[in-house]
Image: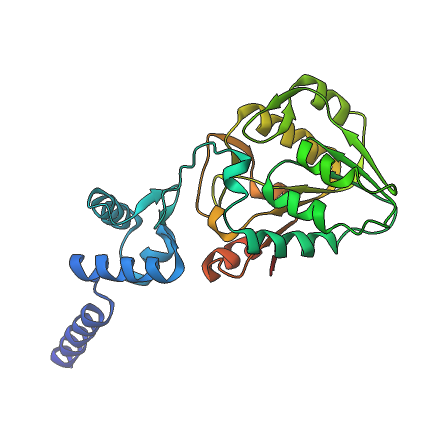
Length: 275
């Protein structure tokens, strides 16, 4: 009886080793790269569960693969694209993801109702929103963007409150104490905001510290915060942190966003609208 018990125990140990043993290093690396090519972004915790190894091992794997120039490590994961973005001019940004931004802008415009009071931040994606707003709609718009003002000033029914302050040449928008002071005295239903980076763990970022501070004030002045961002913004970080994702209600983006990122956002309670 004892001998049979020992035999069964040996079989169990062998079965457990064969079925649940960790994946070998080279094979792990290939699986990581295959998943990254498919999803564009991977998380350490997900990889650990998939490959049956510790997060320490996964982080070492990602470090080795980054040293070979095969990926970029991010906070809690890795990306195919460099997650750190530099400040680029609005003229340069207008030329990329044009179709995606137009679709995002039209979808955002459908969320605006008659006699709404909204805030529109700066960026090329929110400019697409400004172009898509119905001209006959009665509306109050507070904005830091000079280009948004130029779009909306054509329409008699739309009242525009242009925030004052120093003009950032790269974004054609204002920043500073004058702008934040005005926001302390207004209350709006929705904020439509563009960002330079969206990281599931780190949150929303932009290239300017002053603009990040202004965006925080905008969030405080509204009931609902809606982010307009094409799929290239996910898994990236810029210089200045705006806030965590817990302060965001909805994100409108294009269909190229990875399913794993959508799942992560939805688990946080964020509505993800793909167009």
